[in-house]
Image 1: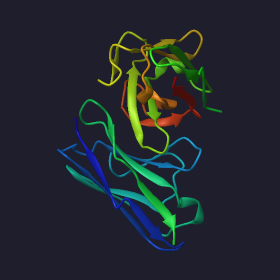
Image 2: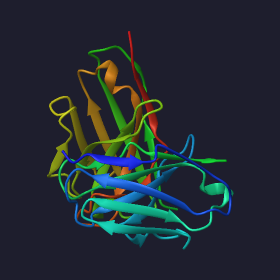
Image 3: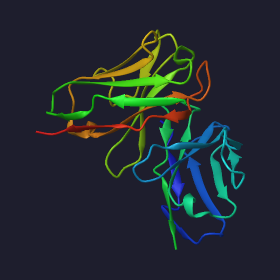
Amino acid sequence: EIVLTQSPGTLSLSPGERATLSCGASQSVNRYLAWYQQKPGQAPRLLIYDASNRATGIPARFSGSGSGTDFTLTISSLEPEDFAVYYCQQRSNWPITFGQGTRLEIK
Amino acid sequence: EVQLVESGGGLVQPGGSLRLSCAASGFTFSDYWMHWVRQAPGKGLVWVSRINSDGRSSSSADSVKGRFTISRDNAKNTLYLQMNSLRVEDTAVYYCARDFAVAGYDAFDIWGQGTMVTVSS
């Protein structure tokens, strides 16, 4: 099973700042990595698929990069609605696995 | 509107059974693979099971294999999860989720609101 490790566990930033979230895989997942956003009491929302492709309706301030074992989700300028928990997920190897999440909180 | 609505959650004793349903609308259900993903209280997301578009092929996580069965009724636009021999550690919100693309992609673009399953004596 591929283990995804997200860092940091919690990120404290202010609106307007740039956020950089990391996801490391225990073995290569090529570019088969997705990112999700989850707000309290809500279902997750797909943000990025295949490492760098924004899903439908996702604002351009969200971008993804990386390949192999190291991936990054960047939010260029934080909006108040971006404060949430973010998960990465790999589909390269069975079983599908998720990272443990990064909590993005308002500083 | 594309929508998934889960039902069937509740409180059940260890060793008991429960069947979850997920009603789909706003898209051609029979075109898409479907999944169940769960989230224990205060914890992260865990993939549980998936089924292909015609229901003939499925797979599940080792933690639920032999206890949970995923199925679908394309005529009723409904996905199911039959959960038997439930354990305390199965306590979670269970989400149904649509696969991102037809023919299977293993990412999830549409999610239901979730249904809570609590296993406790």
